[in-house]
Length: 269
Image: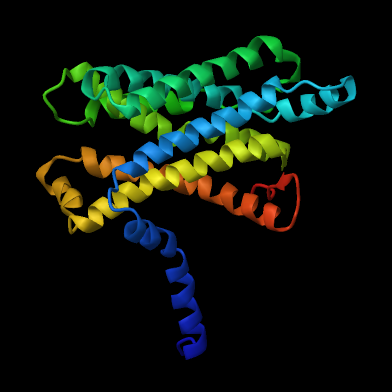
């Protein structure tokens, strides 16, 4: 027998709740290209949170407590972020040269500063044993995929490959950070705020492509049948990164609603 009508209605409403943010964005924002600008701005804001965290200095007792906080940040995610930002900035300088270029530049400079602080100024607080995901696990597959699947434009082929590499690497660059937080089980506030900002940024980027596909009656997905799969791959990359971060964002919001300073993650299955 099927589920009672009441439960069917609850399931239907539950599914529709997840669609509300997308519907709201579609109705409230007329120029959907602005999603990318806001997404990059939110990412930069997340980096600013880290800069504030790494530069705050108080009494010796507070500094000891801050050292515990510094240990929760993944150096490898910051390095991957710097790599894809540098690749995207190189392309943007020749392909676009607009507000995206400026945001990528300031975010890259800020990320390099965070890397410098972790590697040299706060090296003793970085727990390398917990940040144990090799960079080539995500960098090499992204590079190989970019060689075969990249945009077809009038620009130089190396630039188009770099652009695709940046898109693919960005979609998985947060994996070392999530792996490190899973190893630690508890996530301190500043790192949690930073990762949540990444989640919001990726949701906005993903929303842009989903709404674009919807408005075009799915024509971007139809391009797969013509052998042109770059645009669908961009959509897949955005969706993958959004889902990667969705689980953490759920526990972040849950912890905030419960008034908890630390975000507690479940044990791995």
